[in-house]
Length: 181
Length: 219
Image (cartoon, rainbow over all chains, first blue to last red; front, side):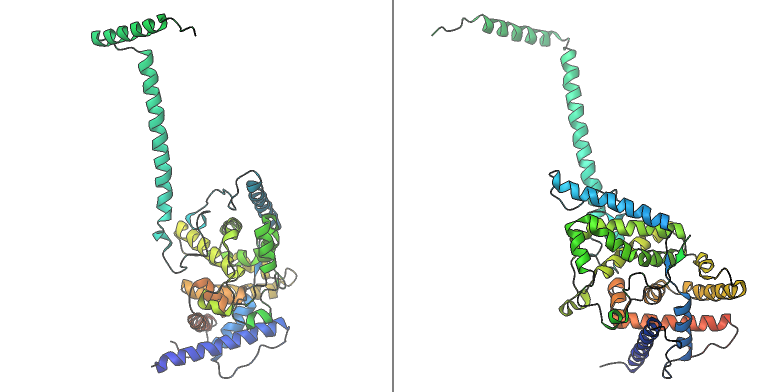
């Protein structure tokens, strides 16, 4: 079942779309007059003609164009060099400018109507980096503690006794004669 | 300072392209394949679409520097993700159809949306462009043209975001309804209705600005 009102809106929108097609094609052909379509609302026709005339495409400055071309070329070169250096990957490490263009983010693969803030990947990366940093910090702290302990022997009598017994054992081992076969 | 493009830069909006839905054979395929093999060949795609992406960002953000920033981010993202792009332009792809241009503009749309979110401000009108259009030798005519352009831009700037995007993609980028649908993530029918309603609003707005009765009934 279809709603008559909805059908009317769709039909009008279709008419407008066809008019726009003919308007743009007339412009391509450099036709002097805009196409006339009496079945289309005059205000829509006038608005389309006005926008066609006034909404022009603009170009950035040559300086910007060349600067960006240079930067893209540098990035492209590093992408080419990465596999040659044993990287083997297709992606290049570009400083992520924002979350929508991270190298691990496929811009065409997400729902364009979805809320970009719902992306869980944005949170997983700091967690990974945080874990690696914590692990490295613990390793460094452990090494520092061992080094500190070795330079500062314990002062308790029990520890001195253990150390003396250990040293005596090492000395007695070194006095054992070598077997002569 | 932005400068106008006289004539078409890419030829992408030719009548042949516009008549179809999303073109069933991506005209950029040879360039995309070459760039996927050798990233340094991406330059050809960049030159072809620079003005289009910049224009879109400029009309959306209303500021020359922000538009440049968005353009740069778009192309860097496109280059670094190009190996992931897959052409889906066959009839069986239906609503999921996508060409390189659609894919690129989806990136641009996200970059621009993100930039607007970060700035947390309403878009300003790209009045700067009005000075670009005018003929410096025809002061009177130039002023009239500037006024007319400013009115039109004001009317477009007052549209809701989705209608404004659709209008810019249709008139400035000369995209087909199917391409716009792919970029905005809507059906072709929904895009047609968006554009139709946007033109009605603009028509009413321009009628008011000119002090005459707007034509057509309001919806």
